Length: 502
Image (cartoon, rainbow, N blue to C red; front, side, top):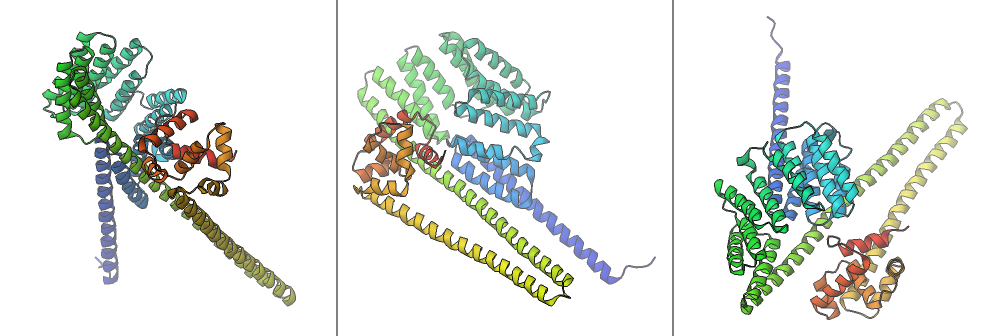
């Protein structure tokens, strides 16, 4: 048998090594993305929304880099979910809708159902209830006859959610029974937390109906499930017992369970929202029991916690919006690069045409020279246009930056001329606001201007020499006038109102 030449042997060996290295590198990237996605999901379970957003973004960048559609879609879902939990519904919806055209989703109904479920929650938070129901219906249709564990889990979660938003007990019970049927299909040891939530929902429903015995029965069932699987995280169960006894005006018993819940929370959760709620309940009970010193102590703890929540929420939203802005800047950069690529292509095409024309008309020297002059002139004009546009863009950006810096400095100094200069920089602001809400006072317009510029409540209070509570109350009054829901960010709403040119 004839032997292969040494050159071919070396080439084949080199190719094998090259493809092996590529495969190893690909596997390494996939493992890294999967680890990031696992971390992001764990952050979600711990209510650490901003950490979920950061981690999912890192996973998304890597998935796009290697072109993995599955992981790109999963990371997008986590990004949208974290934005929703941060209260940025419109930004979240933008991510969800961006995935609608993904081919991967059309071939993966379970993953598609997850996006439809999230979209339903988003529409409901925006008070688009009919659209929300439509999305839930779409999610159900995608999971029809699908009894995979993930599909059953999604159906169960949707039924529970629908149960919490029905007008009467009969409807609630129907949905909870449907949820129960789905839960029976799941391995109990893996999904026992879903069973605990299910029993808590039933307990709350019966307590609302003044059926105390039934309520207590289901609260105990939830607690027993936690004990069965030796889960030490019991603050939700203790809280339910406290709530049950509070409703029955057994205040000492209720306080005992709320304090148990509080101690358990200190070990197993860092979510400030839980602490704010438990402080409020404990404070209320001490008031009922006549211990006003303890009542005041827990009132203060609640206030301090609420301030931390607000501060953390503002910081998280600011960071999330910064990340979104960076994404938009990258998209704009890609768009600019694409535009320049088209211009370059156009120039190359002109050069090719010039060469073809030059060869065809080479016998006519005078005509040939005319064509060369015309083509060069065209190229020069295009280059001048590009140069002129670049200069204009830079000059405009400098003017905008200078004006913004000037206005914010006037605001920080509480300068009397602040609002006049602000109107010069943002000429549509006053008109649009007065059209939307006639009769606004000058002080209210100035507060809106501070909010529009991105100052938080503490900053505004410092700059205008007023208390934080005064500013918060005034902003709350403005939110009522504008008809804003509790989830809407007033600064974003103002910018959307002013940017709307219609």
